[in-house]
Image (cartoon, rainbow, N blue to C red; front, side, top):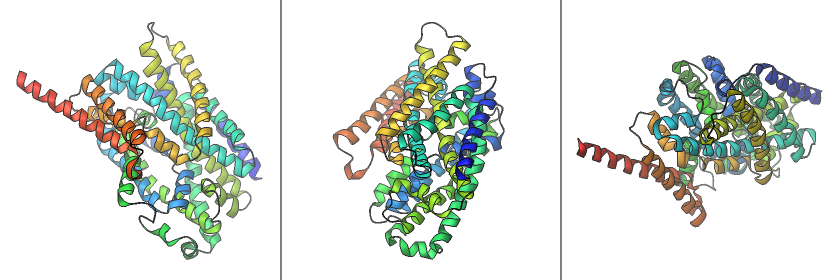
Length: 460
């Protein structure tokens, strides 16, 4: 019965994606689906897109190892969504024709910035997509006994097919179903899991006491702050989330949807994290990566297990399709189109974005096979985005007077800081270079900004 439910669900998602994506005629519809969605749909697709393997299976893994500190760290992401809803989303009406982050950057910094943003978009999306694809492999392995490699091929193959054919419309429609399934299935798993152990007090007694303290025994306050900031800033305004801000013609709708999504993530991250504690209480010698799949397999009855396995698959696929779509749009619209001498027709652009969707999907499979920890893939991928793009993007959207020189000097400073900290200094105090890179970019960017400001005043 469980197998039948899973197969039926996967086929249903594939058919829904292909049906929803019919009639796509140009890259604008492929990327932002005509800007025709309301706030509830944007809330569902945005929530489904960020609640991927890293923030669910990866969160359970890290709580299994380090304790509840990882839940608190992930709330940095929740805070980021709330801040975006207040300060960024209401301003997106200034970009009525934009379909990518590169379009915003081009308006403020020129074509070179658009191309660089496109390259960084492809890298960060491919890395985060790799985390989701890796999670698909774990799920197929533990539930169906399929080797991880083949599980990755099956799960990613389904996502590639409907994302290639249907673009953002297929992604949004499948996200709605996936969001409903995961929003019900994962909390049910935790409730039954706690009951299986014998109640919350039994869980508390079975896990190390340090796992239930704020910092535990393996993290310092400084390391926590850096991790919190990494989750807060690492995915800020990455391409799939910016695309969600383009899905409505009314910025007020996207602002509300983003706020609701941020608030929803707070209890959801707590739920997925505590699942790791329950798995630890049942089987302390378990592979931490398998915490959530193990608990589903161990405590749920037949029938309900199939539904919850489907919800676990939903978690991963709903994030994977979003990053796959964003990466292919960035490659085609922000890199290929600007550097090509001849103007590409709408048909050529659509063919290109679909071919690149397939290519990026294959690249994500390679990433997933090479790097084992899902959450580690996320943190590694962030280094391709925030130290280079975040500062100039946010300052531009907020209305600061910007120019190409600020972008270039800030970006060089940001990536140099990451290289110096991570490669040459080997992560002093166990702190990742992401935050150092953002600080390096911000310092250089603001220095040039203030210098230009003084020069303008002197000329006047």
